[in-house]
Image 1 (tube, rainbow, N blue to C red):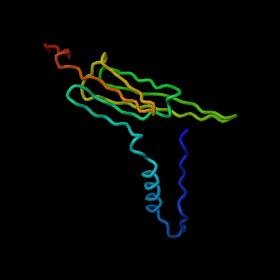
Image 2 (cartoon, rainbow, N blue to C red):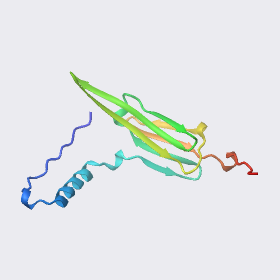
Image 3 (cartoon, one colour):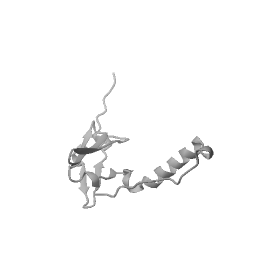
Image 4 (tube, rainbow, N blue to C red):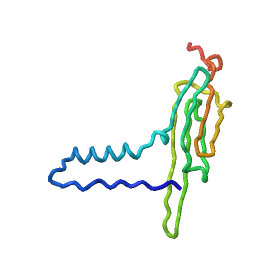
Length: 135
């Protein structure tokens, strides 16, 4: 279980604090708590798209992903923790739209032991895309 990070700002006297000071303090707090490695990354080359997502918090409950309409990837999971009468739920829902159609048959995924999910999807060859004549 990851440690809980808490932020307690130093005391600020109310008369010297403006709204912009408070917003700046909040933004500073958010920047400290947002970690780059928890954000999904998306890359591509000539043959495929690659998505990397940190799903460590959802490894016990499992992670599900689907390719929809040959151009969209959805990753989702839900986990529940409970002690006594208290229950907390955490959900994951990430949606990626590909700029071109993908080959659904070529989806590959790898989940590392530290919770990094890597999904690779081949681009659909332009010869595989059906183009119809308009009359």
